[in-house]
Image (cartoon, rainbow, N blue to C red):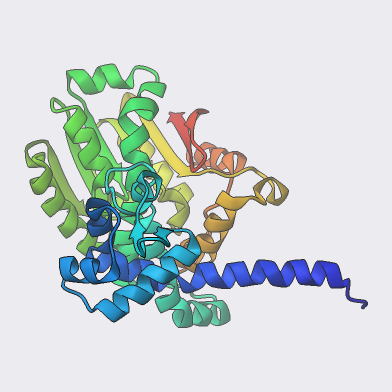
Length: 352
């Protein structure tokens, strides 16, 4: 093989950028944990000393943390005054928990993958997978935070109205099952928007259900929500008007069996809303920035999680619409359509 020096130089330059991006992940986690981003947002142009005093941290550590963020372009540095400042755009990503582009949860998920890497490597060797319940705790909160941003922006405003006749039922009073609800972010958003409806959240991970109950109390929707620790195949048959699954079907060991059972829990005119990561049907359709994140997450999280369960189909986070439609058809759904989409998610409507 003959090296092309220009191509090598370009690739090495890219790798330096990749290493810089990876190296700042723990710095972002520290900033999140210590409240540094919120303090920067509120302070305006500030020095390391002032930020350290505001956050009760050590000035020398803060100086280096700020310099790293400025070098990464995550903060602005003003040379004349030797101050650091967070722009509104940077604040939307790092300091506003309600922002649709808040990325702190994503950094938390990446940190969890680093912690879990040795056990995932063993799953590569054994093929036995690594269960969701066996993961670093920051995975659970990170996933909720990362996806909640998009759910808050689109779920009530765009996705539910895209389903035929569903908003009308929810407004009048419907029965809804949110399967694989995790910490309950999606359940709570729907319960807040439709107080006449009743929402049941189900997840096999007991710790997530405990957090979901607390979050519902905090959000003031405990009256029309309830949560139970159950697998998808154990959800009771209660004639639900709507069953929702947010970014979880591909994590299940037996997604066909799960979808088949959930079909039986629907009322005669009930709807399954399936929210899954955006993906094309072919690998070549997915060679982009979003799929880069999703393939990495699928390798470290979704695929080994599925392999750790019965059947272990391992759809992965980039299954694509055609494969998902096949799963739903095998589960007995006769009508499947893409109802809505964002750069991060596709929303499928399935009817028996």
